[in-house]
Image (cartoon, rainbow, N blue to C red; front, side, top):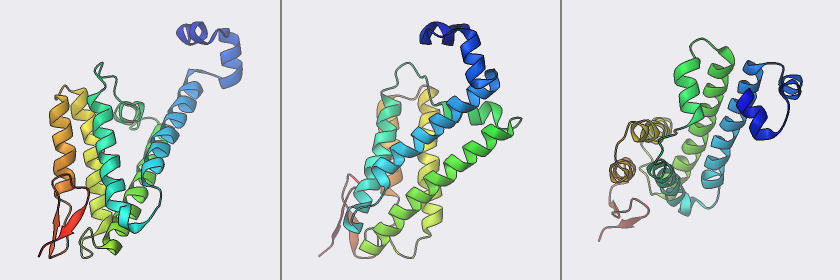
Length: 184
C-alpha cells in the first residue's frame, strides 16, 4: 500500500477508504485487468465480414505472441499469475478468471464459425474445440515466454497453431495462415 500511495500521491487512508482493504483493491485491479484482456480480444475479433474472420483470428494470435515476445522483462500477465497463484483459495479470482476465459472462448468460437461459413476452416471441425485450442495456445505462449523461450520460438508457436486449423478439402492455406486459396 505504501508503494501505491507514493505512486498515486494519495494517502493510505484515502486508499483504504476507497477500497476497504488490500484484498478489495487487488480484486478491483484484477477485475479491471481481466476486462482489458477481453477488450483487446474484442478489438481484434468482434465481428466483421466472414471473409475476414481467418485474418482476424490470425491477427489476434500473432498479436498475443508479439506482445509476449516484446515483454523482455518477463512481467507476464496479471490474469495468468492471479489464476495460477490465487484461484484455488480465492473464489473472486477464480470466478473472474473463469468469466474471462469464457468470454475469450466465445470470441474465438464466433470467429472460427465465421471462417467456417466463409469456407476458410473446415465446416466439419468443432468450433468449440478449435477455440479452446487457440485459447490454450495464446495463454500458453504467455507462460512459456515468461519462462524464457526466445521471441522467434513464440512467433513460430503462433504460426504453427494457425497452420493446424483444418481447411476444407480443395483449399490450401498460405504460409502465413491468413488466407486460404483454392487449389487448381
